[in-house]
View 1 (cartoon, helix red, strand yellow):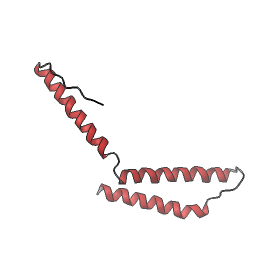
View 2 (tube, rainbow, N blue to C red):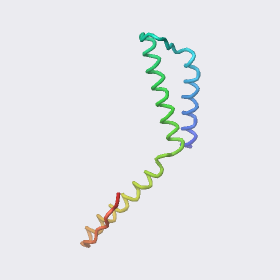
View 3 (spheres, rainbow, N blue to C red):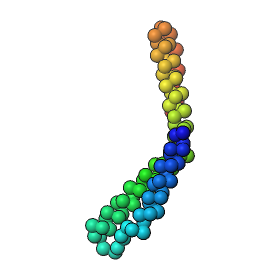
View 4 (cartoon, rainbow, N blue to C red):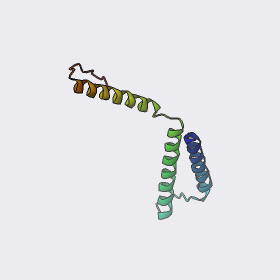
Length: 92
């Protein structure tokens, strides 16, 4: 369900961007309207990039690595509590 939610958000943001681009004003001079249009476009692209990143699950490897580190730290804490001095070193 989470994946479908991300796809929906991505499609909504893309639709909003496609609808708004013809209405944004980009002129040669730096007027308030031009600055607003540029900032709005940058924020819309950031939202699209964030949703795309979540959709392709780039962070899955990082999450798995974090789980491994947490398991090792838990094991080390258990070893210390039991009085054993063998401590596993984690390479980065």
